[in-house]
Image 1: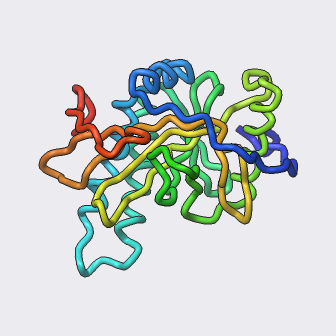
Image 2 (image 1 turned 90 degrees about the horizontal axis):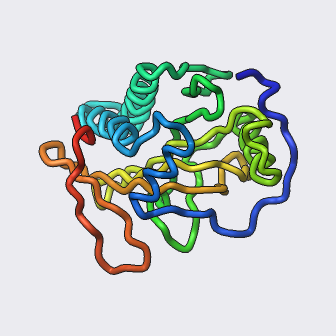
Length: 228
């Protein structure tokens, strides 16, 4: 992946919600379409590792330590798991990626706002400001979406987006395709694959699926390989 992979343009923002997949069987099938190495279990392992690191902080830790440890360990675990499958870690101007061997897809890890990991009236945005690298691949992703030429236009960049909810004490997460960039944040998505939420209960991790337009949630015990 080089700077030329991402060509900056100035598109008008989308005025519609992203295509969102919530059903977990459909999510699994879509992940396999993106790449045969991608499964909900692999992504949940990365999220669990980050959550575990968050819990290692103490009252004496710096105010930003919990969030920083969570992001670093989520990224490390994701890239290590994918490295075992011959994916390549790549850093472009301090922006870390994991790139598939065929270069069809690349994944970044990002924190999102409170809309992350659930289907509601608004799509999520990134929690932190992003720079020129993010603006570049968002523009490239949008061109892929507009012209349906993802395989011909280079590497498509997806984001493992997560949000730690301090009130509910859970982390919600999704794998989504960023397609809109505004005021230094990613604000729009071409597609969102909702992967559920994990309560911050170190002794009993479960993955809770998001159920749109329903007053209750569904508790699902993780399958083999979803916790460590």
